[in-house]
Length: 501
Image (cartoon, rainbow, N blue to C red; front, side, top):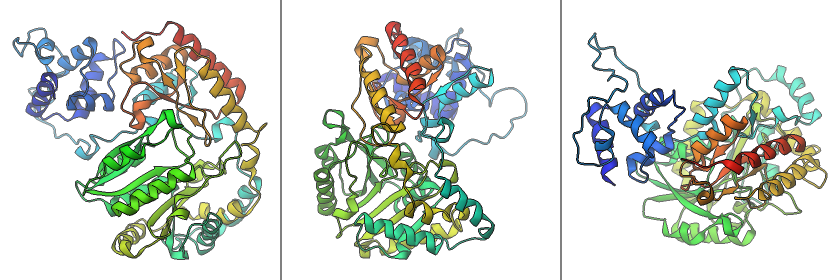
């Protein structure tokens, strides 16, 4: 840690401030000048990884009522008569009112897919400004519709879905998922090895809560879908990020993965196809990951929600099909492939060698029972959705919307000087790289905020996906080509003159 972070942490401890408290006070102080501090950056300041630029330093000093020169490490008096930030809420002169603050467990939780930049976009929208939201993979606002037979079945069956189901899910639903697992060659799966959830997100949280004790480690990709890191952190575990290599089509860096395994590591998470990069992991890479898990006796969690959105004639391979001797948990659902994100229906499949995980599975059952069951009306359409005509296939071939939008945005981004991108093979996200030297970028959240304010286009900064460098952002390419063309023209125009101060 550096002297700045040491002094920052000392003042925070003295004032009993959490990171969230300082962020709130600093952002109130910096509101007039348009300065905004995000959770990820505050965490970096406190850890000593980053020193803030001068304007952010000033608002931090104002928030803490200290001299900014002292805070940055200079040998000057700590207090200054000009420090005039928001008053300490516990020294207002009146009776002290009890404050209810969020749990400290949230201090290191990050979910910028719906974070501070999105909050600003919502404020702008409320003031009447139209914002093009390229921040979240929600198909419905962009004109994607569920297959008609799925909606028909949902309406017909909803009257019979007023009661709870089995905590794992309806028998017919789990049977359909079991048959899908067989088609994916996932071994040793029985009906009670399948759990439905209110989206995959709920099941990820249950899995982390059931597995991790304080200090346990779990390997998670960087970049990741941030819910994985957040759920592991809230469960008391430590998310250890292994690098996915942009120069190798964003495939996992196996050497980096292995060197980060310790005696506290319990599991490896893979996201395949990947969000946010759009990578599809080849079979040989999956075999090597399985070998690594085998050598170190680790659980494999595989998030495969985009497995039916694979393009260019490629085939998705489930890692569980390559590891019958390992305990694997495979996640998928209908939100993306059937364009029904709002229905909240996902599932997880336990497979392979379940004997070493018997006690863990008991924990999964306990947590599954505690939430009673997942959304029963949404469960009722899984059989139709998986067994019927797969309309998603029309989207992912030449001439299909997702395919054509992917090709357009890939070319458009690479045509912008200072921007480059690896072509996604699946899903509907792309994770372009920014030449940070060319644009003098040190804060990617500020980049996203500046782009939003100037061009009214919302993207998510790369650090929002637990990518450590401020040199990437994610674009959702769900809008039609003509809308993406407008967005890319706005980005190109923005980058012509953009330089961070």
